[in-house]
Length: 308
Image (cartoon, rainbow, N blue to C red; front, side, top):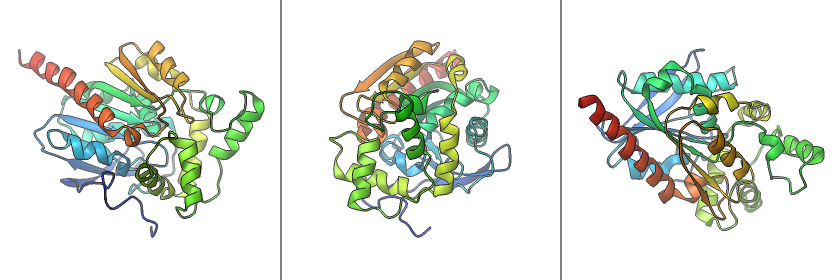
């Protein structure tokens, strides 16, 4: 792809992984996976959202890899993962399970952080045996389990049929995004980021989103349009923290609050004033600190319990 897939300098430039591998999912789809940090360190798995890539987690990877083993993967069709035939929540779950199986030792415990569609991958996999074998805690960032189009605030109209119809057309457009221009940055910032987002944050997100193939973007938009993972929320039994920006138009705080109400073991919600949908980019230190906290409390505690 000739289009630059991410920024090449600054805090959001992706660090070089310690190793890279290709993981094969249940239906034969291939996934690009990166491993950062020491192999003997506590493990963290990062799952990015719709139209993004591993580059979206650059700030967290750079921070956490100093004393964690950070595993990040490109969702099918995104980043360096080839386009796949199947697009479904089952496929998201299959892919996450395949990454866990290939990168972790048997029964090794891990904290999983999912942003947007990455959080939906977690919810889709919550009842799976391999997920339950490995996941000891979860961080859900800017995500939801159902009614995404109905609750979206991208279109500034009162809730109702007209807003839902216009939102569906916008999010499900087949039109190419084109180059990253000043107008494109303004549109992306309005739709996905808080009004105070710094230009370098907007640029980093724009490069990533505009690199996503339009056919992939459209295919996954259809999945998100009909999303229903409410059962997955109820099956996510591990300690789960939730983060959302109060200015999130894509998955507004109503989704985060619904997650908190339905999760069997919610350990807290953090609502970030004025921030939008891209919380790992807009609040990199806070998101990284939340992941660290979950590792310190649940991974280390679990290891002590097993060694007792």
